[in-house]
Image: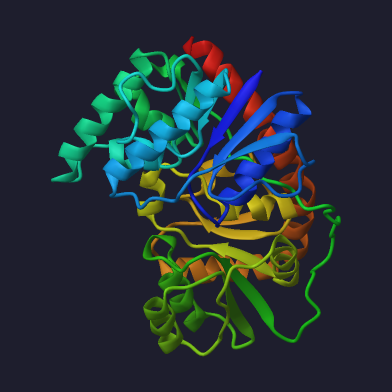
Length: 365
């Protein structure tokens, strides 16, 4: 089979996302064309075709339509059998009426809040987006999402059997040590927050929680930050360190393993988006203990013993949860190191993800 992987996002987690799917397709013996801004690295030369595409801003719809039509035209020249649109969030308004025919098509939707009603003027956009997505399904395209929340939103206007729920794929570290004791020997206890400190992720809440925690507790923010938000958080507390840049997989592994607890204080708004938390899944893959809000609890393994769950939007409750994490760190770490990586291998592998997308294409046909 000949497969096209299309994703016009440059950088971020999408690089490993596309390369992981390309590697999984090659392992299946498929022929692969990658349509992306950068070539796929780390794969055997000559086994993956690369079609260079530009990253076009979300709002430049006409330019985006032209770029997508060029990709579809190229896939027809390649006689592609399956077209995997890996970021429907960006392409929803760009698709031509007849799609990628004759190739079977599956669209991957990362966030579904734009299809939900109850947001005032945005309801007009939601209605138009619903109509457009419905037309995709009627022409035989498949839809894939990563969370129950996203599936629930779409099932309010699409047939449930046309929506595939599949765990977002994560590349596990090369080795996950089985840790049975408290990992840190430092005189300070270190919390880590990975990613941009956006409002919906509760970063201000986390900094506020420091007032109820001992003075030896500090927070490390890892990842590129908005300068204004960074200055605001820094003004609240000096017990913060910053790694304000993209980090490599190896660096992230070191940061996760050097922290006592990974904290995800996400607010209710994040849960409404219906998106998977890549930080949560990466933390599970590395087997590290967590403190997180109930917003992300549905994305944890069933009966998971490696996390403390607290209500969203409450700094004191978050501080109490973090203290509970410190008090039970040995037990949390042991459960996280055993159950987390196993869950990722079983439910969030690239091979399983690709298999589900292929199944979605067959079901749509």
